[in-house]
Each structure stands twice: as C-alpha cells, then as structure tokens.
Length: 173
Image 1 (spheres, helix red, strand yellow):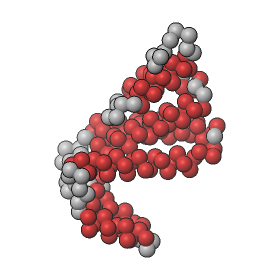
Image 2: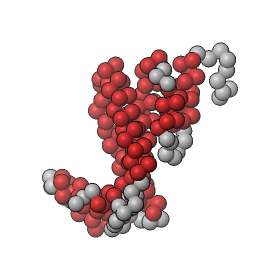
Image 3: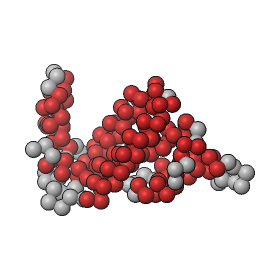
Image 4: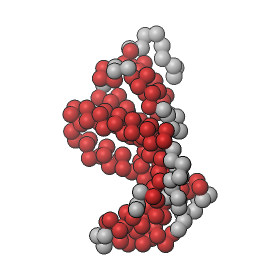
C-alpha cells in the first residue's frame, strides 16, 4: 500500500522519495536532495514544488541553528556550509514556486522565519531541559518589541536564546 508500485509515474515516485526525505526529523546533507532530484523537480506538479520548498526551508533552519549554537572558538563549518546550500535551494525553489503561485509568497516566507525560530527555541529548551533561561531577557525583548524598539528587542532575544560563547551570541557584537 505505502510503497511505490511499478505502475506509478516517475513524478509520483519522485514525490514519494521527497516525502520520505522530509519525514526525517534531523539534519540532512544537501547532497541527499541534490542526488534525489537530479534536475527533475520541475516535472513535479506545483504541490510537489511546495513540498520541496518546505523541505529546503526546514533543513536551512536546522543547519542554521546548528551553526548559531556552535561555539565561537570552534565553529561548526559543516553546519555553515550546509546551511548556505540549503538556503540557496530554498531561495531557488521558492522563487520558482512563487512564479507559478504568487499568492503563497508571504505565507511561505513567514513560515520560513518561524521555522528558524522554532528550531532555535527547541534547541535551547533541550539544552536546559524545558526551561528557557534567562527569562528576564526574553521578557524584556517582548516588551521592547511591543513598543517598537525592534532592534533592541532582537538583540535581547538573541542574548536569551543563544548560549554564551556561541556563534549566535558572537554575531551580536
């Protein structure tokens, strides 16, 4: 039932492989997607393009989180490189999707930003067993954001989110 049969189309088979790749809840090397698609993604229906955009967005966010949480004195160069490749894929695939379905641009871009935040917060919570320290900084960030001090809000939230000595913290300077 759940496996591809010999009577499925190449497009359906490719889409099933993309879905299996997407189901992995960990960082995936970009080469896995590149090998899978081999330039054939444009043969997929637009819904398939959207699934590839979602996969690229999720992976770019996962690799960016690994990079930002890595120690500044020993940066995770592989995470930086993978993030760059996945982010470029996200931009390319989403651009193609937006040309076909312009109405989804804002929602997909918003979803991408939320995925970055979700992975970062999840990682921070995992490091601190469900607690989000330091709470005072995140509260101050929320209040600054509410009164229009966006830059200060972002800085305070990043200080609360990224551990001391991490790339994410070092990039604030």
